[in-house]
Length: 110
Image 1 (cartoon, one colour):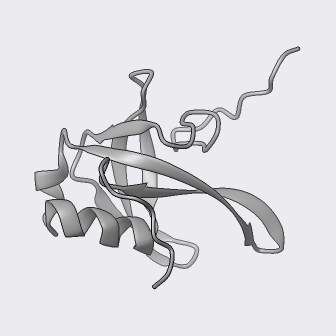
Image 2: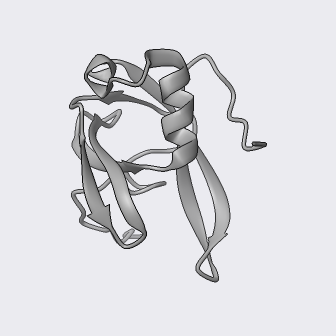
């Protein structure tokens, strides 16, 4: 069986990372204009050593800021735990990546 890969400079859930994988921040990132406003896009290293871009959602930003502070330059080389959650987005079920500190559990309640 051959699995089709999605070629992307962005991190693809369940292809580049699996649930509970550890990734590392490799840049301080930048804010880019997206479809729904500004997004923090940061470079991360996957468990296989590939560098990919990741657009951080609000939950991930909050989780990482609680542990590493609000200066993304301080995040460089630090690890984060990948949590993949299936959610409805735009009427379709999608795999969403949420980041937490490696020692913390994901909390989507508030």
